[in-house]
Image (tube, rainbow, N blue to C red; front, top):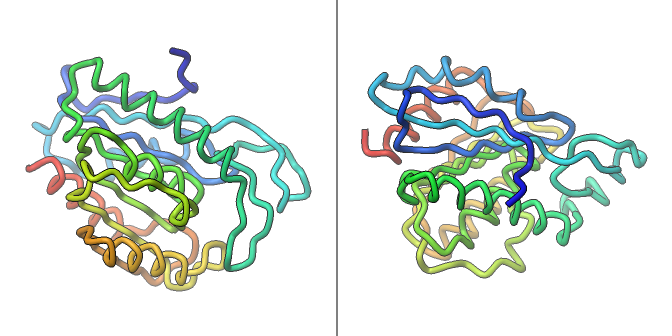
Length: 220
């Protein structure tokens, strides 16, 4: 198994939980690695944080410029037409990270997926199609690109989902976050939807909510 390159940081020597955190378009795994101390998680909560780097590829909406991207984006209108086959390849790559954590002895119910923007679209696909029950999903400033094609796995019907969005996001309109929340609520998922007075970003209040969600997901 050949995994994508990634940053790994552990809060204890023998973690019993894992968070796989996916960055947005044009960034890499370093983008969110500094957030760990800001989460102020309890010291007894042993977590392996994994921040994979997306492959570099041409991105159509950016004039074909090559940059880290989980998939190509063809149009930036409200429908956000994307390269679904590429997204599915990226989802398979993240499934491999989950598989490795299970092989390392982590219970699947203590594996959390988090994703920002493009990374969130991949996190939706992975979490909701996974054949083992996961611990939770945190979707930030993102959209559910595969809502029309995904096969929802009943095993994760009880998956707790946190959806966060900036009220003034000019990159991913808040309507897309609302659409994702409503879609999942209609399917019976437990969704917490939070908005913040920000653009396409992360704010201190949100970091506090992410910390709280992680602790709830992991039963601390």
